[in-house]
Structure formats: C-alpha cells, structure tokens
Image (cartoon, rainbow, N blue to C red; front, side):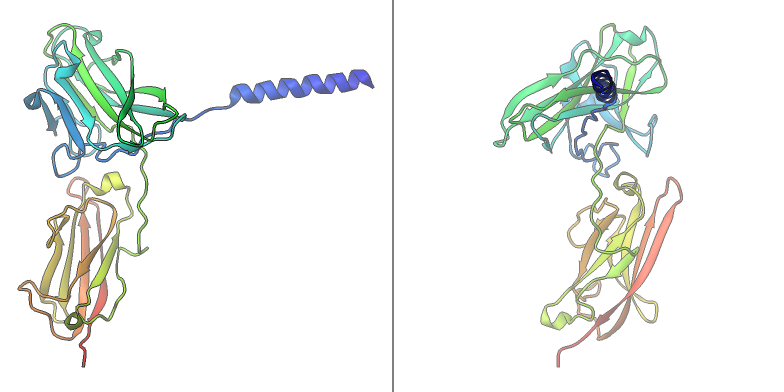
Length: 312
C-alpha cells in the first residue's frame, strides 16, 4: 500500500514538472498608433531621432501597405538615425513586453553584420517621468534584400504605467547600405462600433435642425484598423431626387473639422444643412457611405435613410 502511495506521488510530481516546463508565458505588446507608417500625415505618432532629412517614408520597398520607414545610409552613431513613438503607451508594472519590427537591409556593399539595430523601451511612471530604459543588444539581420523580424523582450518596472519605444540603426563600416522598417509590433485594440451595418443613421432620426438638433451617422468597415488606413472614405447626403446636398466626409477627412478619420469604425454628425450652410427642407434624405482601397481595389459601400423634421 505504501509503495502504491509513493508511486502515485512520484507520478504526480513528474506530471507537475512536465506541465510547468511546457507552460508558455506570452509577452504583451504595446498599443502603438501608426505601426505601419500608413497614416496620411507622414510619421504621425512618431518622432525622428537624429538627421531629419535622412529619415523618411518610402513607397519603394515595403513589407505591407503603401509605405515603410526609410533610414538613408546610417552612420556609426545610433543617435543619428532613429524614431521614437510620440505618445506614451499603457504598460503594467511587472509584466513582460515584446517590441520589434520587420527590417530590410538593402545591399550596396559590405557584410550584413556591419549594419546594426537597437530597440529600446523607455518606461514612465504615473507622473510621466522616465523611470528607466531597457535596451536590446546590437541586433542584425541574417540576409540582404529580404524582410526579417527582429524583437526584444523586457519586463516592466513595478511602478511603470507607460512606455515609449524607439528604433535606431547604425553602420560600423561606411557601406552606404540603407535600412527599411515596417510593421512595428503592436497590440491592435479593436474599436467598438455603434453599428453592425456598413452605415447607419443613429438617433435622433427623425431630427429637427431648426431646434438645434443634429443626427449622428456611424460607419463600420469589416477590415482591421491597420488596413482601414488605406481606404478612402466618404459620406454624402442626397435628396430623394438624387441631387447631392452635402459632403460630410471625403478622402477620409471630416469636411467640417478637417480631421482625418483613419479607423475602420467611426461616427460623424450632420446638422441638417446643405453645402451652403442653409437648413434643408423637411423630408427624407439618403446617406451614402463609400470606402475604397486604391491598392487592392476592395470596396465597401452602403446607404441609409434620414428624416429631417420641422417644429410647428
């Protein structure tokens, strides 16, 4: 009996150790805006480190989308060629985080090991004061003229609540080789849409512009937030005769605020006025939404009805 109990204990301990050994601890990723450099505003949400003219957005070589970040002929100093996120991403103290990106080393001369890459995480406390910095070793790709993922993992300090990441490059020998960066690792947080339809007029509908009311129009494109940046989005209002009354959004830009609407979901307001600023007559109007990706040819469109009332 004692032998059987001892055997069971040994088997249990063995299985416990096996399970512990196979446990995988997944590192978190930061929420980073514009990780693929596709935002219509060049380097939006990124700041350059070093020579501004030698860091640009390029459509020549890219891993996905239309653009990548281009480092022209890195020098021997990391501080001359780099980028850093302009906003502080949320972090949880004690958690493990992974940063990285895809890199492409364009060959002109020399060895791949002559070009080096450094990844850094700058940790911030609740007062937005820098606590410390985690820095990778000098990273290198293994081949010329191909995209390769390089990453770095570090644990957040216990009192960290945020972080910025930076990517810098250098060249130990002057080989004039250029480096491209694309698809920075990022946690994609899906936005919550107010509609499951491609476009929908929200409340109030009907609405009364003469009483100061305005209605809201929601759209939802069934693609990721990263891909949505590539779409040109428009929202137009037509009367029942098919005449265009006003354009609320064109080329993804809010007509009234001038703000780019790059996300895959969003809302926009209509005050019931036409393009001249006059309140439209009482009646039924058609809201038409169109989203088109000129790179892939993919298109999503839809329409809904909005009723303009009048107070008596």
